[in-house]
Image 1 (cartoon, chains in turn blue, red):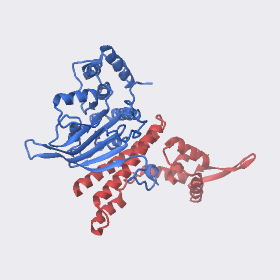
Image 2 (cartoon, each protein chain N blue to C red):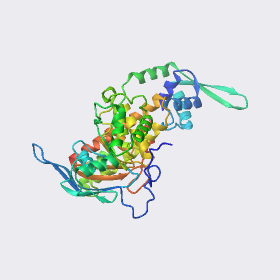
Image 3 (cartoon, one colour):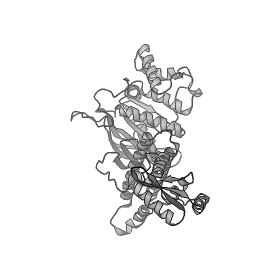
Image 4 (cartoon, rainbow over the protein chains, first blue to last red):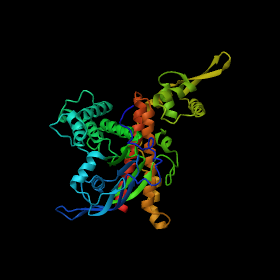
Length: 271
Length: 168
């Protein structure tokens, strides 16, 4: 049994946990606004977003490029600050958090993976993964053990001493995933994690995200790829800085009406 | 069903149930299973039109089974099938009609139509991902069938996105 399962108190695969009624949502945002001031006209990337993510949920945010979905993710991870609006993490309001407090929060409770991996290029694979564990105050022995277990889980055994540049894109993203998960974060944010991978690498990342989600990992994934999005329990369609639709997938929840022949209809070969 | 059955018979004579099994094996569990009755009806029609000929084979303690073989005309029909390029898939014309006509009816909102359609596609995409995971990895034909369906759906979703960008 892997130790990389749900942080305590979470429900089984994909289920909203049967949490006590008072437990706050893991993540809540209200009235988020962010405008980028570049050289041209100001770009209103996020224009008033309310969002709640419960523990154990796998939420995909999808939409055309330039819709502001990556900016939204950056706001949720504290990589950018909103012009207006508030964010609560596990019931704590983060409005007053400064850079260092956000850094600590990301180190301990929010893991992030990016499109271009952002590994430290002059550190080995093993060091890339152990570093956040050590920074979070873990013992070197514990960090090594966690690293070894995660790399094995992600199919990277034998790559410990490799440098990131020696790995394929898919492998680098798996190292980035290991680094993001080594401190057992409550929340994993993924910003186009397969955006620079081929279809095989994409499938691999998707399989791993689904596996961790199956163990209770809460995930917010930004993607323009509908195939990735459809692995989530919930898909938010983001257009022009706003949430255009927020749909539960899978179970016949409210708003999900199946009609027609569905999957059989699209697979049937016709004369 | 006509031409795929004819084409299967190009490999050698077979009876109806064998053809059903051959299709299942080739296309995998994901493919909506052809109904055996439908296969027999199609074979009957193919025989009437002279593309195949059947011969009853006696079986001990069981009803006769009819074994079909391609005629020369049938072989020619299969060749012609391979010779012709296949028609393009069509744009979702019924949905497009709804989208185009909705504003003047005052009965539906275009963005709501798009959102509803997207949910439908995403759910189907999800089912396809499950099918792909459940299907035998080594059955490349079956995997390609599912992947093709996913890519089509992806294109439809991209197109919905374009509609939303234009109409919002």
